[in-house]
Image 1 (tube, rainbow, N blue to C red):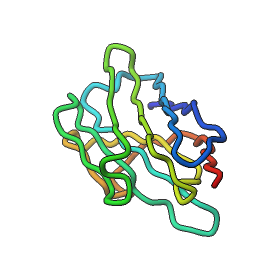
Image 2 (image 1 turned 180 degrees about the vertical axis):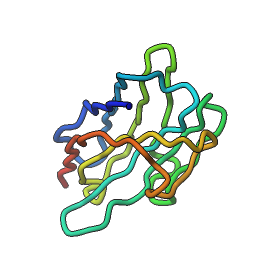
Image 3 (image 1 turned 120 degrees about the vertical axis):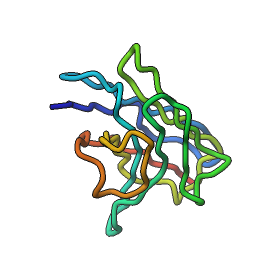
Image 4 (image 1 turned 90 degrees about the vertical axis):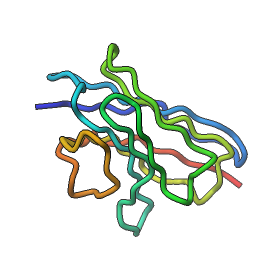
Length: 124
């Protein structure tokens, strides 16, 4: 079992930056691809970014390409999401997730373990 805890959310003005962290416990993240998803009020949970087990491959939703960067530190059992040039439409609860498909995936149903989420609010 993998427990995931997100942190780093908050309130930021449009154009600002935030870095989200996801710390894992219970099992090493080595071998797991990791992903970030988000869910805005009244909307489906959507894919944001994914990173392969060794960090060699990343992929992003079109809406965040060029603004967000996913990274991981397997020695610290952690994953990060650097978010720049934030927009009001980025407002959502952000979730970290772990997938046994080690190459990375954007499909929500291919993730086994989920965190509780952290709120990101971007004001205009």
